[in-house]
Image 1: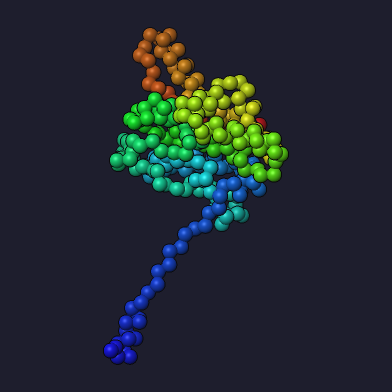
Image 2: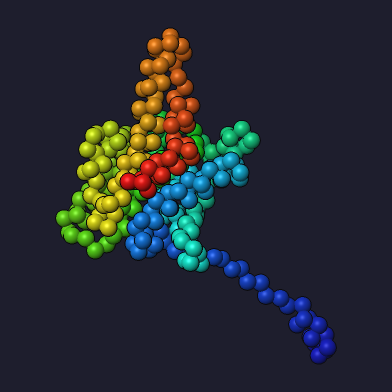
Length: 264
């Protein structure tokens, strides 16, 4: 039996630990109130992905509508957007090569995955040949922006809801090759972006999609064609596709596109 003074000493050793997490809110809540902040979101996420890759040596690999949130504590100085959910992220070595057994496993949320990765999933389902790179996360920002402009606003006409449902289903259903082709067609066809069912409160931001689509298109198709033509004209070796894509979709190019969108 414990003596009173002994009990007191045991009680004094008891401690309580509380883990406190910051409270972030879904991206949809903020954009529903302030649609124009979509440009700020892309801007901040571009910086975040760049810092992760070059400062922290981390590749996120799952940039999506639900993995971007905002911090309500920064209400007074504009929206502060936060990249969350690092379940599929990988650590990189000093050369930028992913480490770990899961580094070569394909990762991402289908509607937001880069075209190049979807094609590789279709052509090499068991043994991916294309390594997930920063440029793929950058491209995902384009698809997040397009998704946001269709799926954020709830009070819309039924016919528009139907059009949106059909459009986003094309990015999320069927085989990987079909999804890749549908996304590529959106960029290649002259009126592809015009046919997207953007909701009324986001329609004026079509300049953002147009500017970003130029970057994604040049990275996916146009830049490589230009590089191949230059190589043929100079009778030099064929260009490295990955290097060409990195030349066209990078932080500087995206920042230029955002500046263009703000100026429109």
